[in-house]
Amino acid sequence: MKLYADRPVRRALQLTADLLALAWIGLWAAAAYALHGTVSELGGSGLLIAAAGDRVDEHMDAAAEAARRVPVAGDSLASPFSSVGDAGASLGEAGRSFQESAASAALALSALAVLLPVLLAVSVWLLPRLRWIRRAADARTAGELSPRARERLLALRALQSVRPALLAEAHPDPAAAWRADDPEAVRALASLELRRLGLEPAGS
Image (cartoon, rainbow, N blue to C red; front, side, top):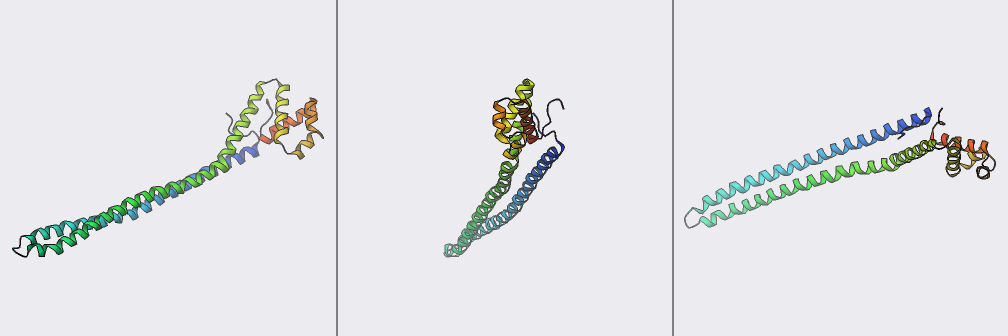
């Protein structure tokens, strides 16, 4: 498998694009990690709220239990403490719910922060690179054919891929020249295809 072009300029551009794409992905991965940590820290306050609510609930329950031991008026005295304890329990549940929501939000936001840039990198960088690698591999595989058959195959690909202005430089009617198996025109067209891919002719 060939990953980079033979021609120096094309190879340098490919290397630069690969490094920039990897740096882009790494940057957003680091940003997503930092975002996850920040949102998770916000959720930590939910644990503090939950702990405070639980302590209020515990202390008020103890106070209500002590008040109930008072003869005659015990239940009346315990009622306010029980109400405050119930409020503490509700506060504890709210704190835990907030912490769970913050954890879910941290995961979702960090995943979104890294997924969108990666999808952009895949569409703008990775897919074109994979197409080039496949086409370069096809051009190399063509080297297993006879030199004449290889030139004709590469010339046919040039007719399909190279800009018409460049084809006209190889021959005024490149398609007709290819059908007629004009050696010079076929060779020129094959060179255009190799040049388009940034490859050197076999054996060079």
